[in-house]
Length: 319
Image (cartoon, rainbow, N blue to C red):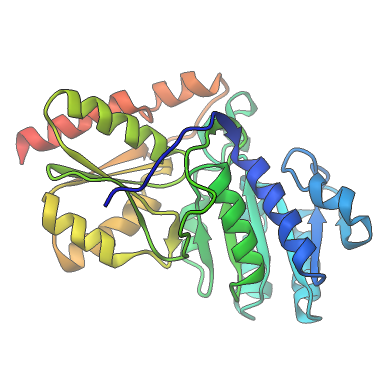
């Protein structure tokens, strides 16, 4: 059965993250926050204003922030550190690997402003490699929710229910907020968003909405596309991917990230081991982004539903 959707308008996923951290902290006095001089930009200000005695602003010193987070976790706290994804995941990779993952510490890392839709900030601030880097680290859970509501739920559960390190990826721009507040959200379990028999569109993050729009457009042309939301990239839901491969016989993945090593690669690893089918991958193809309006960049780099529709037609015509 397809997931029930209701678009409540646009809302940044970073707001969902901030709301989730605050709610988790209200339930759990062990939660502490760590900031890197951009507290408001990543919505950690919700927590900092409510619990100033539990929030530590470390300045623009991301590697130091991660070391402090590891130390706090060793002392029994539940640290939440957030900054732009390019800095949260890439500038601090050594500290995450050795101090956090090697010790399997429960540190929540919020990778904000992920993807090319950051827009005018340009290539230096567009996190397009973070999924690849984070998913290769032992003990790391990698989460990429599709909207603000799901991001809030993911943050609450990551903080108060999971163990070990968690990388939670989210964006800056307002995007459709369409999943239910009462949804059955479980880490490591994908969500069937739309039934379909001709091809499966397996997407993550903001690209889930684009996938749904592509599926609706294809339906007008007689193509029945299944849409699956994989919000947990690691551990990935192998069962729903294998099921899609067996039933629809073709798969296209969609991510706001580099194709190589990213979400599409994670899906392909499952497919090739279990039930190989024709595949295509929507994402950036070995390229940096550039400065521009988010919608223009999404169009230029082929991350829109229209491009997805064309790619799907190509797969089906050659299958």
